[in-house]
Length: 117
Length: 110
Figure 1 (cartoon, rainbow over the protein chains, first blue to last red):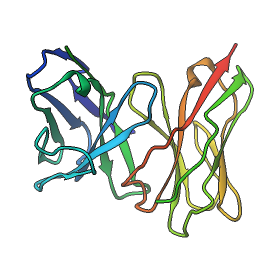
Figure 2 (figure 1 turned 90 degrees about the vertical axis):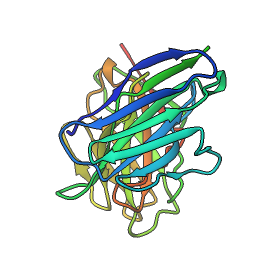
Figure 3 (figure 1 turned 60 degrees about the vertical axis):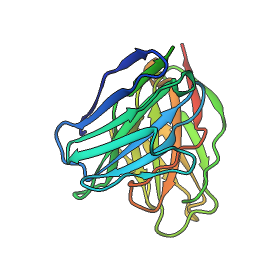
């Protein structure tokens, strides 16, 4: 299957700093990428949908000024957590949507564990 | 998208078949049934999907009832590495928009 990478895999930062997470589709072009957040023992919660070359669409309750999403190319989307606080500590997962061919499916990255001290 | 209901947890003996049920009684005609799994601290992994016919691939089989109100994911010979949370998702965008429910935590035991 197609490969999606995330960088970094884990990050620890101080409260008030900003953290950027990259999501790359390595062997296909993704017109749409999704960002999810997962707290311990909970399911994935969709944060935003990112389309290449346009503004991201945020889910209700997700602050767009705090979670900045940039989708500058068909293989790269970035999520920046601005002024991070301990409550932002979570597992952040991206996915890339590959359309066409025999099947349409989302391919998920390995996740980024963010710990805010 | 239609809502799905799955048992929160299941156990299975290693080497036996694991049958994971999913109810999706409000599914509409153009909605697909997708199954993903998530091993601890990893991103979800696609397993299989179907519309109304039963499907089989190298990982699993998907059995969808004739009325499409429920389905069963079958792992024919479960191994310890199949221990994970399994998510049944119904979507009307052929896999574009996915809404994750609670899933079933499958524990494969020796």
